[in-house]
Amino acid sequence: MDNRPVVVNNQTNLLELEEHIYHLVDVDKPNTFRNLFPYEEVPKIAFNDRVVPHHMPKEIWITDTTFRDGQQSRAPYTPEQIVTIYDYLHRLGGPKGLIRQSEFFLYSKKDRDALYKCMERGYEFPEVTSWIRASKADFQLVKDIGLKETGILVSCSDYHIFYKMKMNRREAMEHYLRIVRDCLETGVRPRCHLEDITRSDIFGFVIPFCLELMKLQQEYGIPIKIRACDTMGFGVNYAGSVLPRSVQGIIYGLYTHAGVPSEQIEWHGHNDFYKAVSNSTTAWLYGCCGINCSLFGIGERTGNTPLEAMVFEYAQLKGTLDGMDTTVITELAEYYEKELGYHIPEQTPFVGRNFNVTRAGIHADGLMKNEEIYNIFDTGKFLNRPPLVSVSNTSGLAGIAVWINAYYRLPEGKKYDKNSSLVHLLKDWVDREYEDGRVTVLADDELLAMIEKACEALGEKTPDQR
Image (cartoon, rainbow, N blue to C red; front, side, top):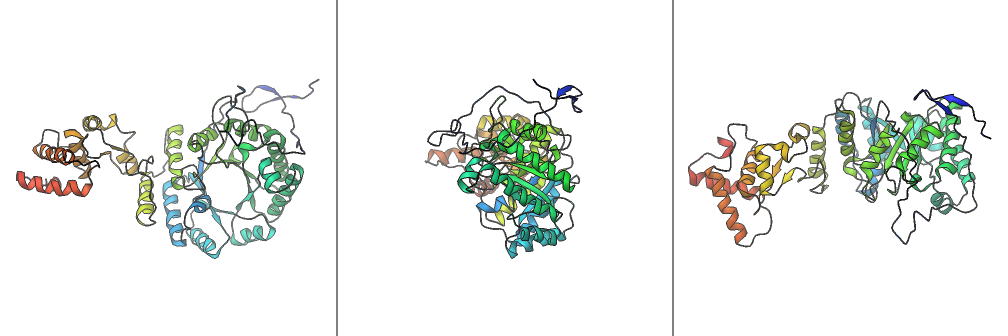
């Protein structure tokens, strides 16, 4: 007989049965969900058609791990580079501070020097937080530095508990709770990184553990954040998919069954199966306030959720950028390329050299008539990057005209069309290049040199002199 009390849900105003209390399910052998993750085969996506409701919080935001996870897959940044990037993040987040936090290592003097310099900036956002080893000495270091929050690793799958930590679930939970209590004793907010959550026993370990964390929160009066870490990128956002791979199921379980407030839930995704962005957006839609990202997705293995992607996901979901300065994204990309020597793949959305470049002549013709036909939005306005074309054997007259107009940023009234003498002369030259066996697109320098020669032959001013 089910004697659970009937209570009013204050969010839906409907009568509901009070949720079951989930207790730790201790097991002798690890549950590795071998039916979903057969190591000798491709992982499987299974469905049970259990769906949960949308629950997007009123406020959502982005947090940054560029200086933590982002530094684990590239040469370390210098303190000066970290401060410069931190300044960019502050500008990008806008007056509402939508890039809410940025996390730092504290291991080395270099790490701490960078952190101190960023704190000296005095910005409210991004708030400087840390990621440390779970020890009393490190918690005291966090407090002495003046940080209010730190990340703590609390791996939650049986893969980690049994195989890496050599514990059982009860031992792991008790170990983690002691660590979190040590952190709370110093007055620092713990941010619990639930590593490998998409291969964990959600009802047998994750929710019981989070319920205990919420008890500690009540005892100490200090918020405890939960970072749901899709460490291996196994999360999926398909309706009716089964746990532990279901992103919406995980988020729903955290705020409904474990009672974690949405503003204390954060999603940290990886891109092993090309799902980092879609999974992060799903986490927002189903009750998670914070999405943890790194610039350009730089992070371990395939990388993290790209921060710049979630800026535009935010705008699409909310219908506004809420003051975020998206032109900073282009400045950051140029800084990484020119100052850090980091190569951004050309086709990377929003920041790659070719993300809004078209090569096909028929597309260029449409672009010249109305750029909305082949451009995702006003990239000139939002990214200070108007649409471009590259010139090749398929560009045609229209493509060459669009390239000239875009490269020289010619205003209306001075733009070339495909009937101009200069465009025709350049088209003849391009055709000869490819008839002679060329296979690569024409570089900007080649086109500029040829334009000067053509204008001289035609007795015309160059485009920038018109």
